Length: 477
Ligand code: SF4
Image (cartoon, rainbow, N blue to C red):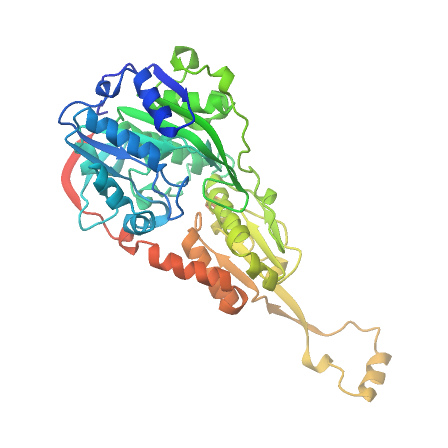
């Protein structure tokens, strides 16, 4: 692991203020001042949340970022780079046009780095625990790495911890979890997807240790977050947690949100791997008292059928975190952006996971994910019974004849139900799912979806699917 700090890793500061600038400033002061983290002539990379073109707080709080850049400059940093991989293959350049980040940073003497711009980015292959991880050479070669993390709720990890922020130092493609079934192990029962995801997140963290980690929860998106959905709600806590050990900072943050170590599978795994401090009693807390500042927030739902959507019936079978996360976002997207469409559609069912029960009707059935597609192949809803043509009553005379034989069963034939929209994938990709659903319903029935899909087509970085440029540096951690 590349060490990156002179500061005592057990120190964690909790600060509270009416201004985000002061909350950040005071936290760093309590930890000994910025010069404990940043030296003269250091090249600094500040990793921020740069997730989607929806503004704050999905992305970084600009006030917090400005404060941090000014502090780094005061400490004598030679160069300050800012960036991260946006979610779902969205381009940094798109986020820049929406947020005006580039010029904002230039005015502060920092530079926005498009890690996803394959023409300018270089990657090094790092071997960690038998895995090859493509890691930005620029971040690797920076003297200091700082994580400035916007905290909100998260459907898989309760909240968007700094460890998750670190993970988007690698591309969306590299973050993808391949389904690897271990002999004798039940993939779904053990939620192997989440275990593999946690293992990958911790591997990425282990490549380059940040010198300073700031969990910015001054503003906090509760409810359906971490994106701005219909059921999301912004609250102002005024709190910031800072330190040099990402695990200790995350543990303190979770405690402020009344979540125990034992309820956080990612921190438990960090403890198993001896990565960072996972014992609260070993953390030297500074600033505000932890117990006096605990906050109660509304976390996102942990069952998909708690997301109620107009005219939509949901059936879930056995499911792992992969489909849970993607379906969570798809359902919240539908609830937020397809309200009008769902009035026209009037009736749709979604089947998610392995062996879901039969849908209530046979029209507009969305089958989500490889497990659902595979285990419903021969289900009743795949076929519909239609009356045979010669069974249709044409004249009054026919009616009399039919009436005489009314005891007989009507003649029907079985046809394949075409009212089904399959979304394959393990888990399905959100953008492809939206395009497939639009193709199924058509523009007339789903005008809202058509609008958002056209927008997404413009901002998704197809380049991110191309092989990345390697600089040829290969290191072992
Ligand atoms: S299809 Fe979905 S539920 Fe099944 S293993 Fe893949 S991610 Fe998990």
